[in-house]
Image 1 (cartoon, helix red, strand yellow):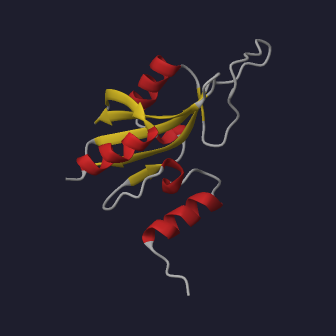
Image 2 (spheres, helix red, strand yellow):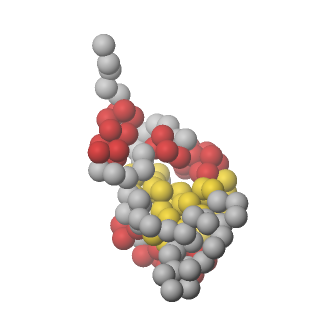
Length: 132
């Protein structure tokens, strides 16, 4: 017997849609969280800040340069959106970065003001603090 929890339903819907899920970023937040699964759906000031700081960013599942080798004839973004979430005044944007040491980080925003880049797992803590 399988019990469908809201978290499982969210994961199933996001997986079916071909986008990242809460589990992909190690998050299991409780309460009101709005998930953002496309770069174009980010608030414009946040999208602009990401562009200013990181330059181009591929959308969820889109091609990006995962390595430290840059093909000048076919350049790809060095970053790719994983997923973003909003709780209260806080927005957390998880993104992958390519290079010799690739990985995932999270950018934390208060409303639309950039606060800090953190390791991916700390993005969940920022959401939890926002809901208190």
